[in-house]
Length: 407
Image 1 (tube, one colour):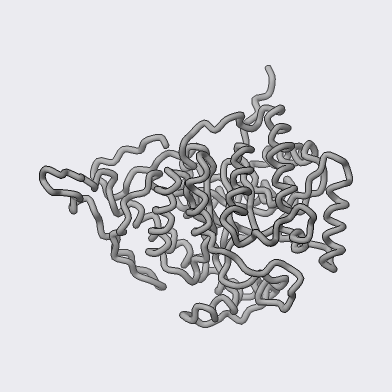
Image 2 (cartoon, helix red, strand yellow):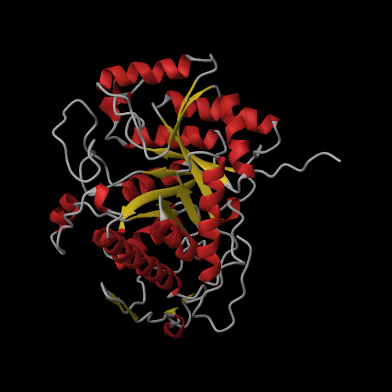
């Protein structure tokens, strides 16, 4: 009997002109268009043509930098961003099926505001919204907001007792933040809007609920001012590199992005997330774990590596990343994805080294290769992002007789 091959999920992470800092200087880059809606719409439309599950859109509260903990003074690399949530809202009506996950720094923003923005995105996209929650320990980002002391730890200090305490505090706050988002999205029951012209009743006030959340960083009474989103709960994702964020994924998220070095590392990471998931009483729930890879692709063996080398020369240094960097052909990448999938990953988020070239290599070369192997869809099979990911539409926690329905 032939081996049954499980379908995998595929996403792309969009950031500027690509993940290599010199990508904006490539011949087909569009640096003059980076701050236009058309630029982002073109990228997401290309991703949708490739039938990808979702795109993430990078964001931060500080300028891009070669330093992980603060700004640099470089002027030869892309600096400046548009707001990721607003980009997603602008391009949502221009797409039909692909999921949209903007990034938001939850350390310095209010959960009430973000819950409303993502609920609105879910309406605008007719059920394709999500959010990647991002934790920040950067002093410059804290200084921009001015509501809390700026941490003074270096990256190499994160494994000290002070570093571990800071991480525990930041990620515990992020867990609370996600809990508030989820409660606010549930604070309107699905049938709270009556819209009865004859009786003059638009809303059934008994089906709007206070959430009464009290935490160490914030307290939120609720309810939301936006009705429950079409998906019930938009998809919550987080990027995780170590124990504290692995627990955030396992305890609070629907989707985790991780950065394994190899298949054995992927297996270990998945196990840690599953342990956290079980400890939180979520063992029966689907929590996807996607492996992140920076990719430089070309049909000509060696050409992708040559491209990265050329970009490294322009940047004045070899590009490094928190994620593994892959250079090679789409078929070679497909081999690697299958190897890592067998280690327990349910999908992958690919970071194109240079845009639009590496995105087109994903959609026009990698996807057909995965389809030939029988492990990727040939058409979109669900109208919502939760549906694409095989996640049920959750019951409303405040409804007295809520019944979970398939998205």
